[in-house]
Amino acid sequence: MLRDAIRSLAEAKIAPYAAAVDEEARFPREALDALVSSDLHAVHVPESYGGAGADALATVIVIEEVARVCASSSLIPAVNKLGSLPVILSGSEDLKKKYLGPLAKGDGMFSYCLSEPDAGSDAAGMKTKAVRDGDFYVLNGVKRWITNAGESEYYTVMAVTDPTKRSKGISAFVVEKSDEGVSFGAPEKKLGIKGSPTREVYLDNVRIPADRMIGEEGTGFATAMKTLDHTRITIAAQALGIAQGALDYAKGYVRERKQFGKAIADFQGIQFMLADMAMKIEAARALTYQAAAKSERGDSDLTFQGAAAKCFASDVAMEVTTGRRPAPRRLRLHPRLPGRAHDARRQDHPDLRGHEPGPAHRDGTQPAVGPASKRRGTAAQREAPGVAPGASRCAVSRSCAGERPLRRTSECHRATP
Ligand SMILES: Cc1cc2nc3c(=O)[nH]c(=O)nc-3n(C[C@H](O)[C@H](O)[C@H](O)COP(=O)(O)OP(=O)(O)OC[C@H]3O[C@@H](n4cnc5c(N)ncnc54)[C@H](O)[C@@H]3O)c2cc1C
Image 1 (cartoon, rainbow, N blue to C red):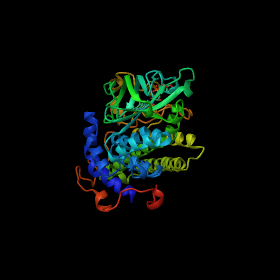
Image 2 (cartoon, protein in one colour):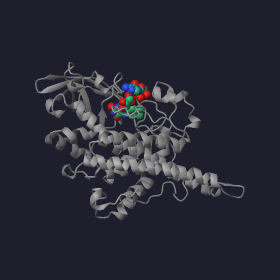
Image 3 (cartoon, rainbow, N blue to C red):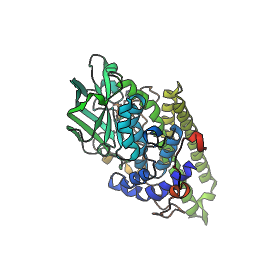
Image 4 (cartoon, rainbow, N blue to C red):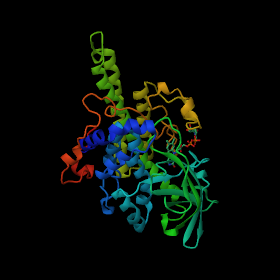
């Protein structure tokens, strides 16, 4: 039921804009509006703060279904969770009330600011500083590759409060877009997921009240890493949705395309390929859902399981969409050098070239696999058989009339792979 509701919404209200969003490299405003109006933009926010109270598995299913039609749009629910989880995990009650309510209502998105120009995998090597000044902290520094930067109202920012202690001298803060001294760089020119802006965030003498610190001073790095443990799964979900969308598109095409007087779907070689894709997607789904269950339970092996799910699902998405694995070494080693969007051979990577490094693979499972899986066309956004572009049905409102579309999976939805 949950999956059906989200799929209907995604196909009716998100898919029709996905190709244009990617081609024009513009933020998917239509998707944000559709997700907000259905309470699906930040489903992880607990009910006590006005959210839908979705558990980790339900959140994964939302992201997966949105990614199935538009990879850029899937980063709305995914990064809202990434950005706000530090507050949920470690924030004071006041901070939770102040920021989770507006997030749940759709008044502002959240982004997550850990990486810096010289601090990627080595996130503890960050240079952004926060200096205490009475009842305030003053932040200075540059955060790089921040997803949805400029679009989000709220930013969890990790900054050094004690340079002598390395990771134990890092603290986390909530910074608002409207704080004086906050500005943004130009959007990165990416190979795909172009609808989700990735920009630098500049902090120039940003003076914020001390009570915007998340948790105790010096605990920010631990909170950031714990957050990543729970959110690698959301990127696995994105990759899974991309792979499923590609398979669904392919299934439609092979039934339509005729050669030698019959649909190419009738050729056994084609059937082998589709079966192989479906098999690998199911394996990725099983790993991802298992990791989501571990996230919900707080299992001790979550770090490994989440990283494994993210890495495996990303590789499957690459293989399903390009027929090759793993990603080319060149992109893995320096995935976002200026101009790379121009020198890569675009014609042979259907938008998924470059599952790029994701936030801090500290466990080292496979550092070079990450959040930026991408695909331009999907079953629904192009000429998918049976789905008229722009079709305006909305099963969320039809099937959920009078009800919230989401509750905890364990209570009322059986999420079947
Ligand atoms: C599209 C996109 C969106 C992003 N969004 C965000 C965001 O919202 N917030 C945020 O904070 N960050 C974000 N990032 C940044 C991301 O977290 C970093 O890219 C990631 O941490 C890797 O850092 P790096 O790119 O600097 O690679 P580097 O750390 O420079 O690594 C380069 C290469 O060296 C390898 N390597 C590094 N260290 C080791 C090691 N110890 N052992 C073996 N190999 C190693 C890596 O695997 C990689 O192949 C985003 C990145 C991208 C591409």
